[in-house]
Structure formats: structure tokens, C-alpha cells
Length: 194
Image (cartoon, rainbow, N blue to C red; front, top):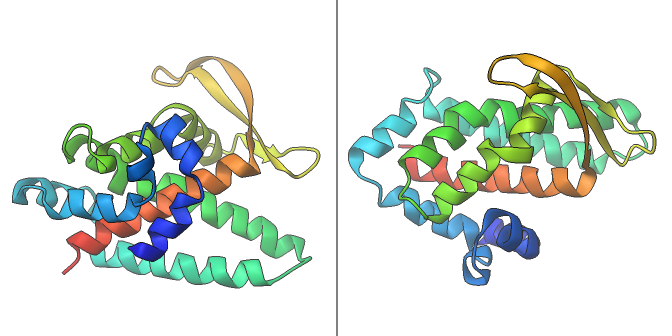
């Protein structure tokens, strides 16, 4: 977990201001999430495992494969096809694949106020939720400078009505959200597998 803690600590200011973590919590997010999950009651762990018909071991394997893809794709420079494929894979795994199977159930079942609950709620609501909806419904494109994504989401997404609201997501936002997503999922699944 220390490697994940170091990766996430780079986002200390965002973790404190946007997720509501303390400076101490922001320094060891993955370790604290792992502890939050490890000490959950058996029934809460069972509910997280059962959030999807896909076995937890298969989800963990997908995270490992995703990390391998990410490592490979960042090593390839000046290849627009690889870059674009990476954008799709990263955003799908981090915001669509993991939302229902991990973040929503952890936000519900983790101890109220815990790092796991707050981080998972952040990844399931607000701007991240709007981005996930825009992305999963194909309502996005690269901005003109290729420094982020333009997105559109229904004003009333619950009733699937109303006009579309336009917003942009910067590369800095994506880097933070993706790192947090991977860290929370790894810490959670590492505690629940086996």
C-alpha cells in the first residue's frame, strides 16, 4: 500500500479540499482504505464482494491488466492511436467498470466518515459522476487543445430529461480522479480477495 500512498500523496491538496481528508489521511490514503475495509463486519465485506456477479478475483485481474496497459501505453510516445485507446481504457475502468462494483457499495458499507467512505462517495457523485455519465453515454470529445475533455450531461439525469449541460474536464482532473480510483479499488480488492 505504501507505493499507492506515495502516488496519491502527490494529490494532497485535492484530497484535502475536494474529498475532505485531513493532511494525515491524505498522506496514507491506500493504507487507511485497506484498514477500513479489513475491519468491516463480515456481512459488509460479503455485500461488497457480491456487488457484481463478476468474481472479485476477476476484477482484481482486470486491475492488474489495466495497470500493465497503462505502463505500456505511457512508454509509447507520439502515437495518437495508443494515446486515444489509453483515454478510453483508463476512463472506462476508473469510472464505469469500478463505479457500481466498488465505489457505490463501499461508500454505503464503509464506516461513516472513514477514508474509504469519503473517497468512494467522491468517486460516485458530483463532478466525477457527471463525467462518468457523459463518458459512458458517448457525450464527450477532446477539447481543441487536447488538454482535456469536453462533456455533456443531462441537467436532470435521474429522470433522463432536460437540456444538456456542457462542462470540461482537465487532464489534471483526470489524473487525480484516475489515481484515486485505482488506489481505492486496489486497496479494497486486496483486502477482500482470497
